[in-house]
Amino acid sequence: MAAYDKADLERRMAGSVEALKGDLVGLRTGRASTSLLDPITVEVYGSQMPLNQVATVSVPESRLISVQVWDKGNVGPCDKAIRSAGLGLNPIVDGTTLRIPIPDLTEERRKELAKLAGQYAEKARIAARNVRRDGMESLKLDEKKNVFGEDERKRLETEVQKLTDATIADIDAAASAKEKEILGK
Image 1: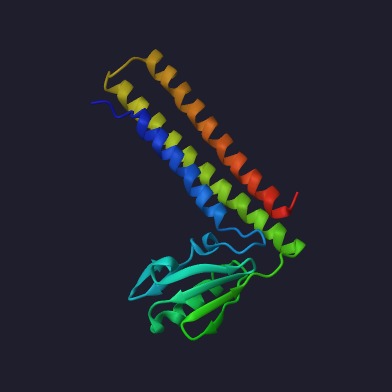
Image 2 (image 1 turned 180 degrees about the vertical axis):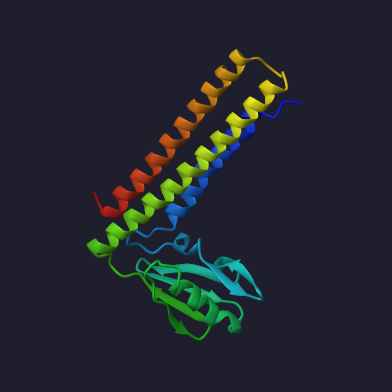
């Protein structure tokens, strides 16, 4: 049985691009969006849960996000999670509802967010390179097991490298587009 699985490598590399896109959606660009709060997890019932599993998140107007917490006891943890998420948001508690005004982005904050987008992209690039490393190791292992010869291994290594290059190009394109959006260029 061969250890090298091209479909698995493609799936894992595509996963790193999708994870990056998910992270980038959470970076705000001055407009209210429910996806802004997607990366936030809240410590409730003794475990970490996504915010959207303990509350209803909506956008009643373009500069405001409303978070309707289902359990009154979770209002405090939700407020704390949003404040400590590093998004620069300050919820206003109103009973079981958290109103989150979206402030205008300052130039300094835009630069911080663009830098954060770059960090997310680097994390995705590292993930893609780790997948490449796994693929290369499995190719060497298959060659040792005489599944195929050196020529076939080299051909497949070139294939893995091309897949990696394409994935990193996708990552760079997504990050670049988000940085332009954040910086308003």
